[in-house]
Image (cartoon, rainbow over all chains, first blue to last red; front, side):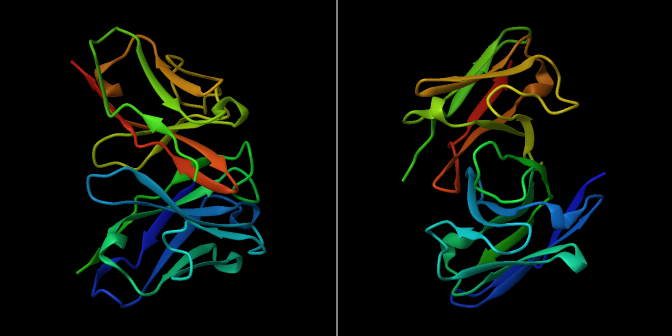
Length: 123
Length: 106
């Protein structure tokens, strides 16, 4: 059974940094692209970032570009999101999600497993 | 930037058919996925590549996509189907989600 477990969320002041982690199990982690998707309280889903299986290809939403950095360590079956210069509008539940494909953002790809999320509060 | 538009809410009676639509420019040229999110839970993939169901998703869930509109259809809607539903497509290598439709079954 695929499991994705996020951690690292918490309360942080505007302008500060936070690093989220996502531990994966039950899959060959290094075979798949991964994503971060966030959901502000009471709002819809917003895609944040993606990283390919080998970290060669990354992508970001315009809202976080230049402030957030996605990375992964396939030897540790882990995904990360370094969030700098946090703003009030970054406050959300952050989910990690697995892509069915090796490179995210490709036509026909989809997010077939999601974690439970980790809450980031900026205040 | 590319946008996907969904109606904010839809109400159906148990046993009726629920049709949740998602519109976007030339959406029929893209693959659409649908995610169900029940209150307090993570999103769950219910339809991928327009009309395919992951294993474990009931047959009453189906999807279509043509022109500018994709549709998620739930036949014989059950109370357990009450949830928010999000469509999603890719544009320029970024994932775009619709705003979500809250389905109420009453």
